[in-house]
Length: 213
Image 1 (cartoon, rainbow, N blue to C red):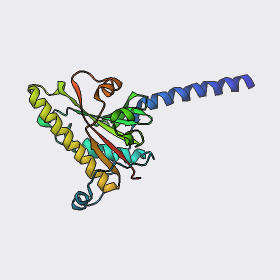
Image 2 (cartoon, helix red, strand yellow):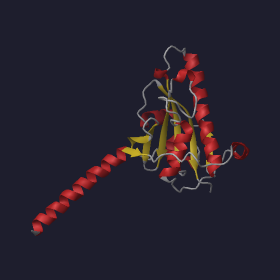
Image 3 (cartoon, rainbow, N blue to C red):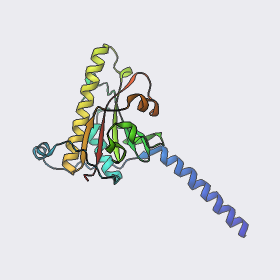
Image 4 (spheres, helix red, strand yellow):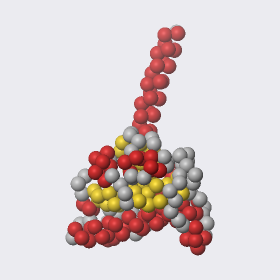
């Protein structure tokens, strides 16, 4: 009987271990809290960049709200987002880089999919605070989705669409008292390799978010 109990416990530990591994690959975000926040004019008044971040992690609910505000689904029609995109290409991918790893935001299912288990925060920027702040968003324009556009238009529209998303993040952070700054100083070559991006995927900007120090 004792051997049976020990074997059962061992199998339970294996099952739990396997389940944990599966959970790490996908993080289902809780529904966004769309009723919270300050009035728009107050948020615009308080919008600012900050470069002083506490290392404390953001709760999962806060991360859920942040990503939905950035470029989440906000209407019943398929693919309608909180940020506009040229020709409705929806070509901008948001990579969420944290201490626990790097994830790709799936707006349709409002979840995160694991890309790398490494802490890539330092590669998201050349400023020292990037490796201390809990979240760095990396905005990637997938030019393969921009069918029919010239190279110049892909560059222009991709950058504009990233700008809309980054401003949504700024406004959310101003509403919730979070520190935030958008950045162009990114180690694109190293980060492109680390995130396993295709040649058509171009890193445009990164944005650091966390609690103010």
